[in-house]
Length: 410
Ligand SMILES: [Zn+2]
Image (cartoon, rainbow, N blue to C red):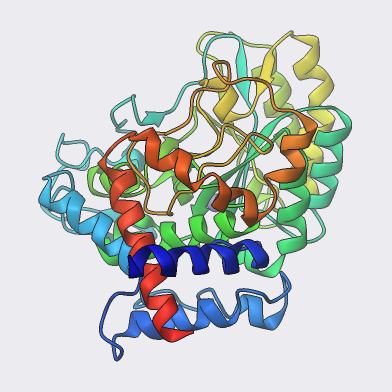
């Protein structure tokens, strides 16, 4: 009874703040996670982008950053279920991840850096036939992202943005601009752009979890379903954490513009990237094109913009990743405007909402109402009745524990 009362009070406070925090520190008072929770609580009503709001999230290097208990519980449950391979992190040598004494192409490792592909139910490399998956990594970036977002909106073109969490922290206004366009899917890159395979399990959880958390907090509680690892670096261990702890679908690529090198590496130019794009657009359409592009610079953005008429001339179907594979953009909402089902960041392995084509079209009134935490809280009961998997129940247990902790500390 106490839990229920506490939850109602918490839900009311969250609704007022329009921020659904989901850390669940049910550790002793002296545990680091409790300090983390206090930071989250103190910034809950702070304006987005303010110093108090930024203080809710990791600052600087991420190694050793405390992890909300709900994420650790989800990770522990995945380990106990035998879903996380006991594989040592890769060792970086000359800028490349290596596996001393082991074959990176072996079934135990299947390193994407070495072009080994993961299970195609959770990892995509090729786009469907006749389809270009439009996606951009590393945003949001001042001086280049706004140009891209304006172009996409003007052309009614959908895209997936694999955001870096620390860039969202610095450019939250641009993240909100992208989300405000109902065609733009927000996905997860990582918090600090590391080679994920070189990290401990704990730090992989931190990198993905905090990026999901800040996206969740800025999008009315939406938990992203799409992830792309930096450098395309993923192996069986990191895949398992992404898929079984956080419910991610992983998108690699089958064509690489190298556009991140514009202005960084001699000989790589905006025009060179443009020429690559128009050549691919004029080529075979099966499989389709999953192109690695970045919103890192005016040059990388302009190469895409200049090539866009050629894409249209060749009658490609250009879509974001979610629509291309008919997958909901978020684990708990079909897209940026559909209703949101309240869900913790440590989500079940599969989505609890239908695919985009199975879902009813969103209405403008939905678009308005779901941008508030109030809607996320109000739909709480829907989730509980959904019974889409034990991950949902676990999530709710965590939220209830969070509620108790919050009530005790308020
Ligand atoms: Zn990247």
